[in-house]
Image (cartoon, rainbow over all chains, first blue to last red; front, side, top):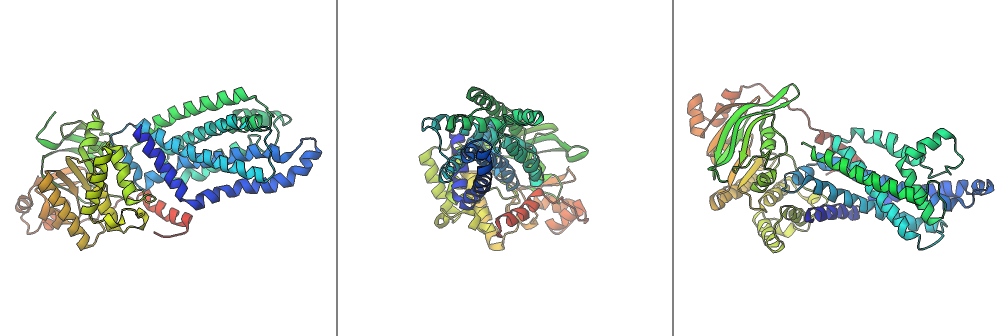
Length: 248
Length: 269
């Protein structure tokens, strides 16, 4: 328990001390809200889609969580390269606890980032339909954060250095964001895009947030929750297996 | 289980693909000894230490640390030793005190004991006044001293030091060796170290082992090694045994990373 706590705390300390990282990672969501929100707003309304800012906000929150979470997980490579991982690996504690502590720390950070972006969207005119909906929305956000941090950790366990980082950003993270329906409604897209969006885990986060925040859903909230929970558990299991296999 | 030996290695082999890093070496280190493990770059020193400290699994052979097997009894082994790695292993974004505390909690040192020990150890390595400074502001020597203090926090019975004094000025090297020697004398901690500075081995080690290309070449006191090779100094003995050819060591990924990170953060460290 203490192991998990101290690793969690370390992640939080590192995050809260790096102000440039906090502000830097808010840049992208703000840009999306500003450019897409105001840019596509009028045409979306004219096409009968309603308020685009309300539609876009859950997508942008999901994006913020996705990026922060994957990056927090992948940061394991830095620990490996700068030697700190060795310090944790020679300690008389279980590998699973180390992995879980790190992952929970990263997930907490990604969740915090999501909450900050949520408040930013309010400034841009986003209005959730009910305050009560925030509770399940935060649950969705946490599950998403947990899943993507565990995914990042699992990937990082297999990588030796940052050479593959660009690959992961361009062929995994970016497509997950753009194809998740965070920017457009999935109801009327062509069939192949619909299939991709069903495979894309981020779709269930976006949909879950829309369902709880603006009462619009494509998959249904219960499916969103089931998918995100099972993916989190599965990835944690795979991630801790891969982590336990790390040799330095 | 108690054993007279702090470290026992029998027919140890480690291969990476076609490459044999450690090729059938056997040796033992009695408890309470200062043991030097010497060899040119790429000889297999660090690989051996990694196997002794549970970071790598041996391909074959048997190992014992304090009587425990690093493959089967990992936690007992891990509690038995402290280590200063060849490369830095501190979290630069944490303070000196936080790095120590992290270690203490991982090793299950009780809070009260932890605070006293951290205070005492930081005092010994003369970092008390910098305990709340971030490690990223520390010089190489300060980092080394902190790593030594950290490695001792859980009172290990064996202390591994992989090139603890590399890149340090003579003053700091001297100071660090003073601590290590005192530790060995007062607490009876077994010291297992590697170095490229022959005078350190000559001055401080009881037994010296020389390995090269994964093979153990010889083991004995400095005097024995000199006699055996009919040379005047340990350095000459070392060169006679291992030859004069310069060894290539592959650049580690860490070197590339450091450069990248500097670009990323826009500042040099």
